[in-house]
Image (cartoon, rainbow, N blue to C red; front, top):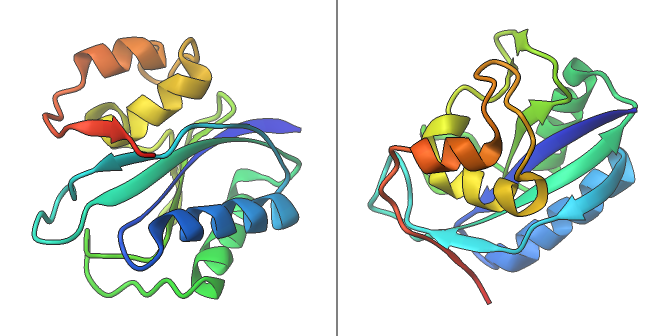
Length: 160
């Protein structure tokens, strides 16, 4: 079993409901969720003329390989109605693999650790809530240290 960290997010429709559905599908099809962060709201990143996103970090224990997991996740996104029409555009659901154990992968479909993790406060803050001391396998810094160094100025706040 491998400990994996995922980030779910979305900014269309019932955002909280979509993240709940994603958690259910991930647990049913990918492994066991062992930690779940609070929901966090942030302004859109990359393409700002769209609704705010909700994000949540998940800790998953899985027996799937990294490649099997990304294929399963892409199917889950599609099953939930995800359309990939515009880079950084609005989406019902987005599920990213942030970290896959201490492994490093560089495939066209999968780059782990997620290359933008150190630059995205909306990913680091929920991840810090469930894995503050986790060490990034490339940068050898903890999630807390990465958050302190993060250049992203967007405000990220807990959603209630």
